[in-house]
Length: 344
Image (tube, rainbow, N blue to C red; front, side, top):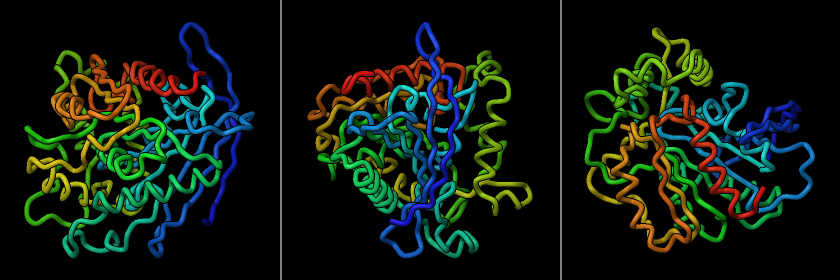
């Protein structure tokens, strides 16, 4: 693997129940080569500066959902700290990745062409391959046999699928807003006509989708002042070509939309939950309309071989609760699940 590393030291305020601690964190960014020619996967790592030993139960890898990259959400400082920093400051070696076609990873050549010139790109099989490449990179880098996986939305489908195929490399599996067999329309819209290689999303469309399902009298207080703009600025900046369009857009591969139509949207499962044999957490917000609660509630009893499984429904939160006023409830629930294996 060729690594392009950027080292930075900074102090992160670690928010804890009843007290605040100061932890010095190290940040590294690297491009991990895929077996596919010309493709590199962006990876970011944060960990305590004094961390000298690495253990499976203290190593976490996060992957994003269908539209937006990981680095602009999982490691976005809101209220002084990102979720990535929240976990790392508690003694964890934390990683995120952007699947090819997203964020800072290589964009397939089809994204340099008119979207209509090619069929949907970056389907689930390809994304799971990218995850496998990064998992193997981390395991070799830290000389550990397993790690924890944390996926958001489509990312939870990818992480679950990877786990069914590679259980020996997974310590624990946390699925945040997991999709399942669809009974309601998807909020991810790719426009009329044949499905193209990729789709575009405007800033106002992103906010409209985010607010879907939120009671009118709760909308004003859902996202603290400035947080949506901070996220949108970071997210749309991750696609310089899209940012130059008029109006500015974010481009996202349509492989996930094609998979959704062929599997969850057609009443078919994408992976077999019975093949998940590690402790598993399903967690989401009650106002989630991208992956409504009925999805996780249907999936949960199918995890027949997952020891220590649990389902958590968080009050007054959407699909994007990690960037809303109640984000700390998400953080605490996931942290509790992770801490069970090794303790803080």
